[in-house]
Amino acid sequence: MRLFYLLILLALCAISCTPATTAPTSPRQLLHSDGINLTLAPGHAPVETPLTLTLEAEGLTAVSGELTGVNMYMGRVPIRFSQLAANSWQAEFLLGACSEPDMQWQLVLQLQDQQGQNVTLKQTFQSSWR
Image (tube, rainbow, N blue to C red; front, top):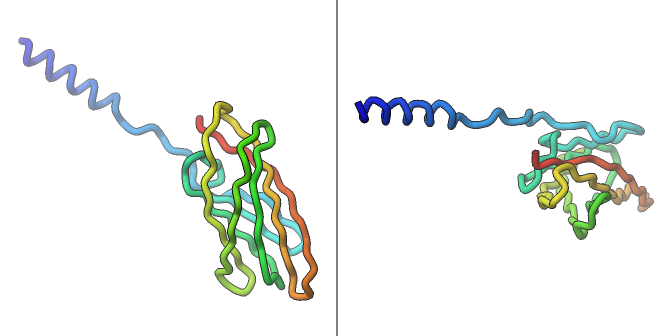
């Protein structure tokens, strides 16, 4: 009889240990204007997980950036872009976890065009560890 109860207990534990449903991994469009398209993947921006920024724009020679926390100081996270194609740039980075379950971030991008002119873009987004 004990064996029967033990097997039932093990079966219940196995059923309850199924992994949680994961959030969608589709990218989120952060900016789409004036020939510039900026996306973040995965779009729900989980902390302590590799994130990818993809920038599509014509005529750029250099792209760099940094992230800073809006609702809490988290230091500066440098964003280093690599050119994938003539009009495509990509960067991978991590966001740290903090005591706030939902964190606002300020992304500042520095874009340089073929004429040497610099453009600064600012965009905020939210990460979460929930």
